[in-house]
Length: 165
Image (cartoon, rainbow, N blue to C red; front, top):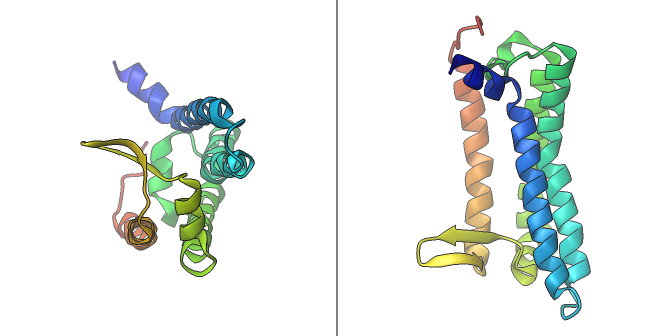
């Protein structure tokens, strides 16, 4: 059983990239079914590609750290205070992505674009797979992430996770 967990923690980055690829394939299939009848399909396809690149980039960095031997296991990313270049790059990329997304949603009409294209879908009890149509809901979701990541990063840095993994 220890081997299963060890493999998962070593190749967590690969699992996330596989999940992103699966989500992309599923979304492309759904889009190609409606592509002929929807004029916005091309723009939605662009945002799907952007989503894969955007959310995949930190995990590509994590994979590069693993493959080069700098970060043998995912737990190294909980110790940015060690100044590991891949760990720092991972957190810097996440922070830049969060700042850019927040700016786009709040200052450049991104929330309206998300609402109009219906690309933010939430599965919830009583509301399976419906796009969020509320600008406040979209902005609240993004603002929550923008506030929580710096707090989480502060907690990670201030906590002294053991460095024996």
